[in-house]
Length: 74
Image 1 (tube, one colour):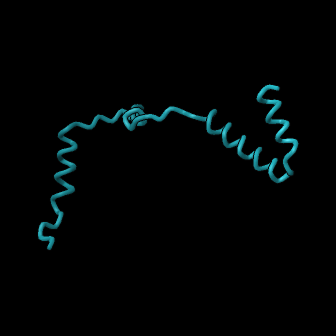
Image 2 (image 1 turned 180 degrees about the horizontal axis):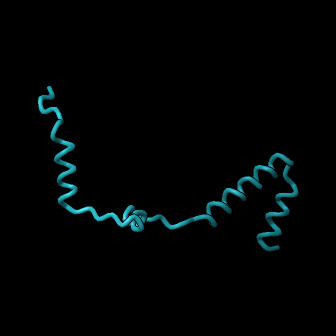
Image 3 (image 1 turned 180 degrees about the vertical axis):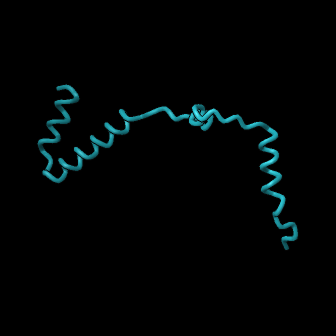
C-alpha cells in the first residue's frame, strides 16, 4: 500500500465533517507549497520607478524632519 492509498483508506473511515476538515487542510497545504513567490527587496520593488535618491537628499529630508522637533521635553 502506497501513501496515497493509505490516506484514502483513512479518509473513507472518517465522518463527513472530518472529511471536510481534511480536505480544507489539504487545500491549505497545497496553497502553502505551490503559491510561494520570492520576496522582493524594496530596491527591487522600486526599480522601475527610476527614482534616484542621493545621500544629500536623505540628509536634507532628515534635517527638515528634525528642525521643528521639540527640544525641551521634560
